[in-house]
Length: 366
Image (cartoon, rainbow, N blue to C red; front, side, top):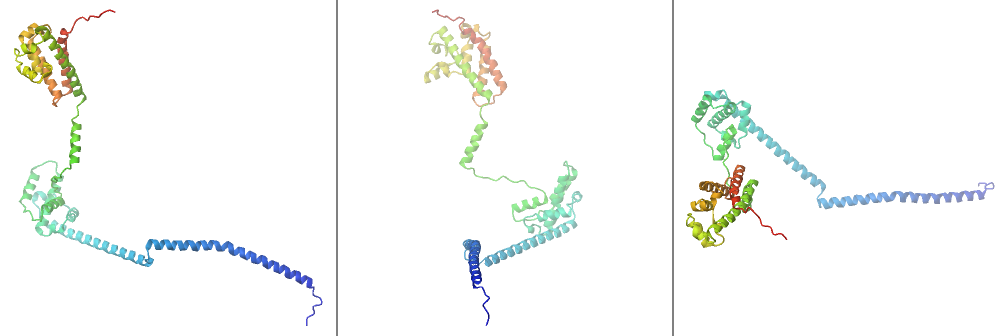
């Protein structure tokens, strides 16, 4: 039996109290530790669950392994198709080389022998044909070989000489092999280098296209500046000429001068138009009528001799002005030089018309 006489129970109790107090602190610290690291872990688990849900929504209920197997099968099919394509291309190229080798052994007309297509170029031309059956016989290969040489010859000469003429004549003697269609012939000759012309295709235009093209034609026919200037000049000068001509004729022969004088100067057609349509008589006149009225001997002596030296001069001036007016107004060719001539003609007429303009102006003083 132990002897507890020397044990200090007070110190033991204090020690146990301190241990218990330390355990409470440890428990509290442990609780805090767990709380501090449990929250991020929970968040990570939640994110993983969300990602899994998103994958399910994207791929449905399919297993990802099935998707990978499908992708692998597709890749395998692509590799197989690529291998088949390469194998076919390799076989076609070997076949073209074999036919080119055969062509190298065939004779050519003497004018073409110096222009024989090299083996590599001939192989490429044969390979470019849409249908390899176009070279299915010796006759097709021989014709292709000659056509290719003729194409190289044409490209190599700068002028049509005797040698080229003889080569073409020899080529024309070779029988043309049969092909299935016109497009086949075109492809065959194009392959040799003898490019055939492309005939235009016929296409029905829509109404909108026709309107656009018609509008473009109208724009191309817009009046140049010198034509617009000519029309303005003629308009002003011709109206002024009519005013002066009507005034001097009325002053000399009275207001009824159209009825009494037009039949005399061979202007019955003008008189008829005026009677039929009305208005001012000279509104229906042309430059021929102006010349006849002013150049008629009686009218010229009585009125126009003071302004012009010769009646034929008046007729010629009016004819020139009329021709230039017709060119500018009726869609004929009208050049800047014509505008120059028009200006000079009317300035000459203006010089004569100034004689019939009043010399004085009466101004009433206020």
